[in-house]
Length: 196
Image (cartoon, rainbow, N blue to C red):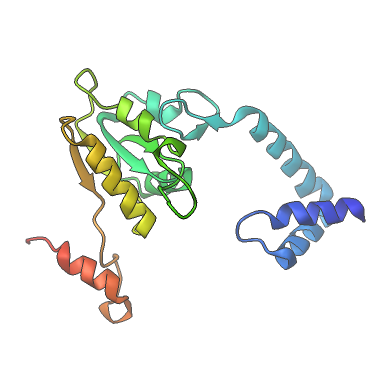
C-alpha cells in the first residue's frame, strides 16, 4: 500500500487534482496497468528526458531553439509576450497569431518577492534593438494586478527602443451576453470600443 499512497500523494500535487481525485486517478491507473499505467510511465520518462525550455523564447519542446522559433514562415518582427507556456499554447490553439513568442515565467509580484530578475524580462529586452528585426511587442499578460504591473514595467523598459508596444484587447467575449458579464469586463469593453 505504501506505493499506492506515494502515487496518490504525487498525483495530488498536480493542479486541479485534490486528494479524492488523485485517489480515483491512482485506482484507475492500477486497474488499467497495461493499457494506461505503463504507457503513461513511459511517456513521463521520455518527456522528462527530452522536453526542455527553448533558450530563445521559453516554450517547451524537444528541440532547442523550439519549432516556433525556427519556423521561417512565422513573422520574426512580432513577439507576443505571455506569462506561462500554457498561455502560449492557448494562443496557438486559437490559430490567429503567426509571430514569435516570449514566455516570462510568471509575473512581477511584490507580495511573493518576484522581481524582474526572477523573470525572463532581460532576455526579452535582448531580443529588441537596432540590430534586431523586432517591430512590435504584444503584451498578453493576464488582466490581474500582477499581470498589469508586469505589462506596465515591460512597457517602461521598452520606451525608446524603437518598437511598437501593444496590448491584447479585452472586454466582451465572442458569444458573451452583456447581462452575464461582470462590471470590470463591461467597463474594459466600453473603454476599448472600436469604430465600425
